[in-house]
Length: 328
Image (cartoon, rainbow, N blue to C red; front, side):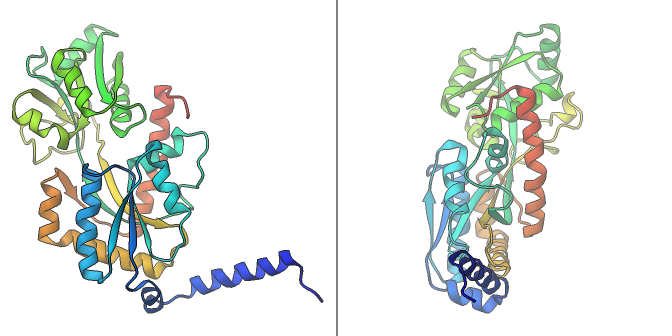
């Protein structure tokens, strides 16, 4: 009985799946051995995310004995970079620097060219990072309780600055406003320099930003830290209390970055990347470099990272809906 073209394609597809399903660790590593691995980063060069990828990749490359090159693909809230990895062959030669934005974009866009949970394979978390509420050095607010008291006594007058609409910082500002039950405005700016300028000139009252780019401003006393937004004080700012300590009970939000691969990547390769990445994170040299970037180094299993991503998507979807941010 002749087989139709459609039937032939069906059987070829099943054969392809079967081959990948039964790849042994040795076979998987042999297939990718010596070939260049592309590590896609959804940001331009020089930021904390890019530097994290470069530092970890360099150590992994030394251990694995094969080159890992950084491929910067900024744009569209990380969609450009994520799509390039989601569509890449699952052959162990493509990685993605995953961040909060992967979870955020799942709800920020009406449609995406990929399925966030099906077309990406989590490998490990790499690091977490804190965010901080800051105000200008000459501000009336000496503490977060001062700011909360003013906002509640003057509904609609407090301005909270952040970078771009839909960014992690912008959504955290919206979440903070909601959790603290404040009638306040969240004002977006095109990048940290513009945000700092507006804060220091008094155009906004406070700002929400990642700790790392604010450290020089805080240490020089150009701005004042009012509260960090994670569940514990950050070692970089030991004298700055948490929001939970200062009148916003149970508030605990941190940013994160991690490593992923195309969906369908054989488990043997995922296991290898996980092992190599966590070994790199355990290196004193790598740990110091990342800590110097105000990052909290923290690896995980693939399953733990998958659960993190699954929990983050509905969390940010709720924030986006409550903030009334229109889908793009």
